[in-house]
Length: 328
Ligand code: UT7
Image (cartoon, rainbow, N blue to C red; front, side, top):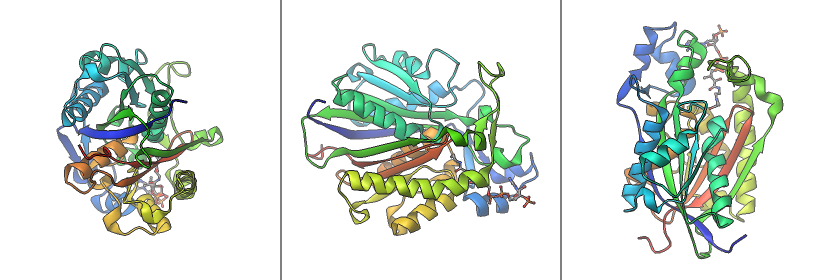
C-alpha cells in the first residue's frame, strides 16, 4: 500500500425543494405530528420533484463539493455513489454523474450498503486511493427513498426523505494524524428480514417497497454502533475526548441520543439534522456534515466520528480529521 494520507477536503449537499411536513403526512395516513416527533425527532423531509432523479441530486452535491475547493470534474479520478435508489437497475448512477460533471477520466461505480452506504463507500474510496488508483475521489451519498416507500404504510413512510451529500477526498504525501484516520465495516446477513425492499430484478422483477420491523432494527442499532465506534477509536489509538464532532447517520433522534449518551458527548459535539431531513439513508452523513461545515460548527483540523447502520444488516464507523493540514 502506497505511503500517504487520504484527506477529506470539502463537502457539498443538495436537498430537493419540496418540503413535506408531518402535518402533510397526517392527511395521507393515520399518524400525527406528535407521534412522529416523539418517536423519531423528525419534523419534515424533502421530496424529489416529478422527473427529478437520484443522479440529479448527486450531481448538484458533487458540483458544490468541487466548487468549494475550486476544482472541476476533470480533476477527479474516482466517483463512488452510495445509493439504494439508483436511477435505473443499470448503468450505475455514478456513471451518469461522471458524464454530467465532465469527469471524463474518472472510474465510476455505485456501492449499495443502504444506510451504511456512505461509510462503506468512504472506506472503498480510501482503499483505492491508497492503492494508487488516482489522486482525487468524490464519495457521494444520494437517495430518492420517496420512490421506494409504500405511502400507505405509516410505519415506514413517515421515516425517510430524499437528498444528497458529497465529500471530496484527496490523496497526498503522508501527514501524521490527518484525513481518514481509521475505518471499520461489518455485515450480518442473518438479519436481512428486519429491513429490506420487497422487490428486485431477480426476485420479483419489480422495484418494491421498504419493509421494516423498526423496533428490531432499533435494538441492534446502539449496541452495534457503539461497538464499532470503540473499534475505530482503538484502531486510531484515540479516546472519545479527542472527538470534536459525532456526525452520525440520521435515522432516529433516539438512536443518535443513545450513542451520544454512550460516548458521553454533550449536545455541542453532536450534529443532528434528522429533524429537517428525516432518514436520507446513504445521504444522511454527508448532508449533516455539509450543514455543520456550512454554518461554521465543523472547522478545519477537527476530528469527526461517523457511524451508520442499515439493511443487511451492515454497519460501520470512521474517524476523520477534516480539511487540510495547512488549513488552505
Ligand atoms: O436507517 C436504517 C435503520 N433504521 C432505523 O434505524 C430505524 C430504527 N427504528 C426506529 O426508528 C423505530 O423503531 C420506529 C420509529 C420505526 C418505530 O418506533 P417504535 O417506538 O419502535 O414503535 P413501534 O414500531 O414499536 O410501534 C409502536 C406503536 C404501534 O402501535 P401499537 O401496536 O402499540 O398499538 C404502531 O402501530 O406505534 C404505531 N405506529 C404509529 N402510530 C402513529 C407505527 N407507526 C406509526 C405512525 N403513526 N407513523
